[in-house]
Figure (cartoon, rainbow, N blue to C red):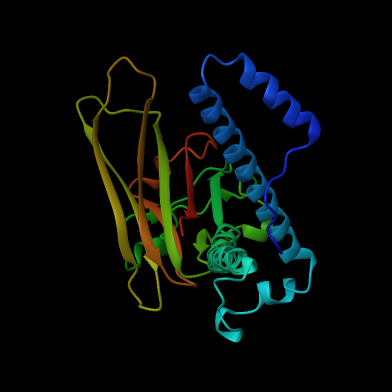
Length: 266
């Protein structure tokens, strides 16, 4: 695109002459004329650069803008070269960010599993068969699943045990509520809660254990105590979790006092 020298219109020239007559000295008049001409020339160059940049997008050079840098000859004298360089740098940055954003979105949308079991209000029976077992305490089996999340991301329960749906890290927690109606004067009770993991091995693995020794009050009609514990563990698919207690006949299966659950952290 050809570059034209700035020209003054008759009206502008007349205005300049009038202003020069009003200025106190020829020195100021010359300085003013030089400044005006220089400013007009700068404005014209900015306008021409703008027109050239627009032409890069609407003219034949637009195809070159989208081509890789090594596919055409680099010509820094071409006004579209700078536009093409800046645009391709921007396109490269965007293309590098897209996989990262997609991966973060995929991670955020990962389905996490959870379960929250509560006591079902039925008395926990200490069965005779529990005396022949490979773990301490007596397994609590009177659970209700009505407080658990929807079935599409729920950890299923089978025979009083939570069955892990997939490998991952899970936060496991349990609270056992003990109620003793006939305290014996001067005697204490040791209350123990266990959380176990059952795998393919014959012996369950103890994940957590909490112990409390209580002294019964003489005036109380019954004694109330609770034990809570929780922690994060790495679990594998089809691992099974269950809770046992030392004095299962004293367990009160109120849904707000006795509960057991787990949720996947990642």
